[in-house]
Length: 114
Image 1 (cartoon, rainbow, N blue to C red):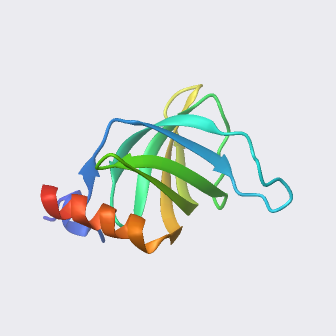
Image 2 (tube, helix red, strand yellow):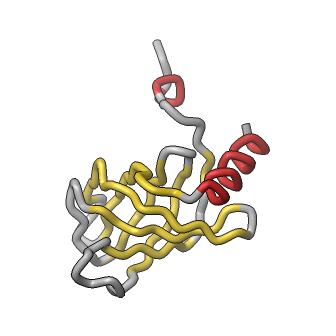
């Protein structure tokens, strides 16, 4: 039998950091930022918990987080969202846009933990 990590497309690292995110809306460039807690991270996406806000499947979010003391900003698609309780939603984001330098930092940090 395969474990969940065997089925994963990307190597993941655990994280427990505050992240910020906002809806990407062309009509509203400065969308208000919301806070969440990162849970794990890969070169393909991030999983985090959001508190007190509604996040829907298919939404596009701009997510900001730290990797090796460097700030990384990505644009990603909400590929799943699960309510953990009345206030907390666990969210899976698949990266759509990430600049090459940020991807290099992310891959380097994954190599160090892998």
